[in-house]
Length: 191
Image (tube, rainbow, N blue to C red; front, side, top):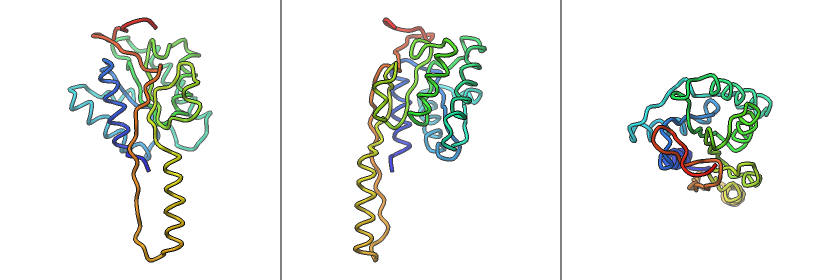
């Protein structure tokens, strides 16, 4: 697997380094508990609050329509909220959730990254081709799958061996979906 806490820590720190102070999470229950805890911890260490009103959860059922519905609710809440309370950035549980968020935000007239920045997690092959290209966490999926095959074949050959766990370090892949902002969440530079 991937170091989930490390991925959340890298993503959150990147957003803080880019000037964001109102950061939250589009996630699913259970599978995101580690990432969500780490996001809150990094924000706490930076002296930045976490607003639970901007935490959006979806049922992790693989249904893109349901993910898009939750992302649309986020876009609607974002539009209706006072500007001073809106998140300037969201960390998405996965690249498919980020893709749904970009779609929902675009339909609502909310610009990524001009109005809100997004980070995904997976680095799917399609991620650099989104508009904007998605900043994401490289989860080394190909290396994980190769490790699974290696572990299974080793276990078949040597059933007496103890269980082995391999954890891969994530890598931040910065692209266009995150924008640097200044004090008061004002954009810096051209959109």
